[in-house]
Image (cartoon, rainbow, N blue to C red; front, side, top):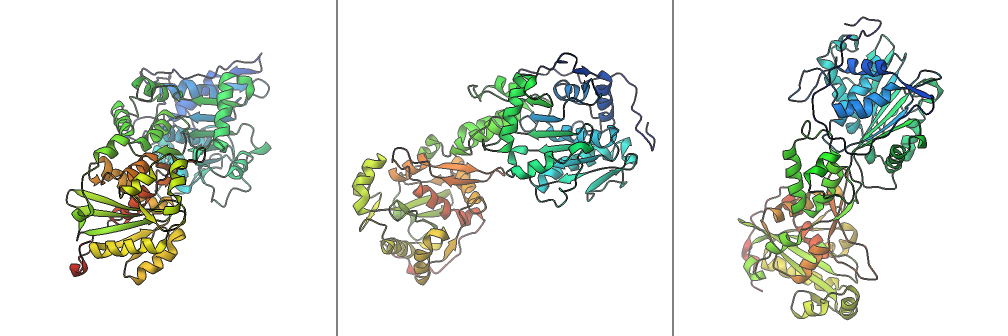
Length: 555
């Protein structure tokens, strides 16, 4: 089937999978533009014939010939490799933007395309790169390529042979070509002569300069270089990815917008009902093949129960560009967690504290998290400067004054937060309960933390970052949705629960975020942030220590 000098492709009639595929999303209409371009079916058959020599790596097709799905053949392979320039017979399209939701086999397809450009395209000295923002992401496509080759007859033409897990570069001696990974922190970006480039999950790229280096890495050295973007939608509408997305949308409307760009986008529309299975099929061309309806139903159900997951579902499953910020807590779930208990109910129990000082004119909260057999009970000490209560009530349109009168908020003397008052309440809690530690934001609370340490209260700083807050946020959400987190129906705390948003990183971690001010009105989230901090030790797996409880007294 193959020799040392070239690859002999099987002369077989192309047999594509017999699958019913939904193709409802707008499709780029491609014409010859008055004879400027022509279509070469043999070139398309050559690509698919090459791919058939690769092997699938995922169950239930493991070890079977890699046959592209119908939508990939019709929307990507056929136009990308079939349309040629009439003047020099090279490929018309030099760039591909493939915007498809997760679990539609983007990595497998990108891998097969890379391998064809590396081995089957007839380019001498080809340089092919699997690229991404981070080294680990770039390795996903490259490792898929190694796996596709491992059980393929083409592996005999590759060096090193056998291909190992540690292999970082593949060589094809027949054309002196190489294939490797590339990321933002790679040291080999200068001096590149790129023939093939696949950018995986391009939405995560923050460095526009890195993208410029890559796109300018071909120059005049290559006759028909191909740069491919494979990505799901992102958050940042100021990113280079969003610019490429808009360009792909334009070229789908009008091929003359950019004659070298092929745009393939499967997505829902903003007005679509994101819970409708018909919308799922519209955005996921591989639904029923690489992505099951059961998976979609489960993820949709989770998103309906957890507001913070709705943006993730829309972005990852429906390929919609969303905001990084989203409302976090479901009001009905929070209300169900309310219980009628007072502080005496928690007397003598082991407790973890969280301190969110915020601004010296805003709400400040010292929160407690008390683990019991049935779950974790929260208790907030909420503070506000007494002199600010009347104006703040008018400004924020919430009854701070009534909450103070009813005992839900402590009014501290003056017009700024009185740290001595807060310190006294922390000492009171330490005497009333078995206070294990208090987690705090070191940037704001250094003064109080130093005073607390002198009173034998263990203080632990927590970074207000995804690394620091991601785990306790997840623990808060997990306990709440599982019915194991309880709160004492403090109306100020409930107001904060209804206000709080979260900011989601591309790695899936979340951090608390206060909504923007509207017409001077502030939406406070301090009681929830303090509760999250109080859960930080439990989220890290720290168990309460048994201590001498003789110091515990009644209020």
